[in-house]
Length: 347
Image (cartoon, rainbow, N blue to C red):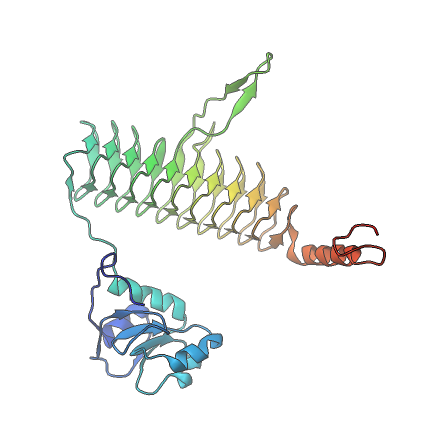
């Protein structure tokens, strides 16, 4: 099924030549042929563009009625008769760019909604869009072309680089954001970190959280994710990092460039992640750890020790993947040993 035009206005039709140019590939077919949109292999019609990135989908390709297909060179011989092709190195990346050609981000509509509250000394760059009931605090500074959605809140002194987008109900305090940062609905940036001290009488006292959050260019933060400000130093999110929905990042944590943090993961305070680290869903990282560049942490892993660069770990406690699989295998064999039932209990 093609994208629903009620939610995703289409910028089509587009010629095969323009589609190939955006995808960074080579057109095979009539360069002037025009296409109306994009769709899956199963749903695409003769005026739509689809893609295939792996041989396991060949049956879908051969049955597809798509008018054009983005695909790697190796799969070109399997293209159905009559279909045009856009030959690229990475079909998934190429198609992503084609989809954005047909469905670009909503344009900025400069202006301040009458219900928005903007402090007198806030500085708004040229062409900003401030939505209904948004709040922009004293001495805040927004770069050109920022979009602040309904009910979003920008605290006192916060700085946003150009082209940032805050979706409805996102909030930012005690933070400096780079260019092109996107905060999805309900994202919370800069709130007080979880720091406490036990007094002699057993009561908790909150440790003042005196740092801020520094977010690099082109970072995206998913819906209802939270990034706490630092306690004595800053919490830092490196350029290009992508954070999924419902992620918690504790105070003083530092993430490098291009990290991927997937839903329900938690990164405890003062942990340091290198560049291009992947943390899969529901994984947890204890505090004050160091995770090396390009390390990958599997889903539901519990990381309790430092992880070297370029290592894949799984399990709780998290071990290198081969060690974990050997341990799982040994445990399974033990559970199935004579004298035990299928649940491992003694018979």
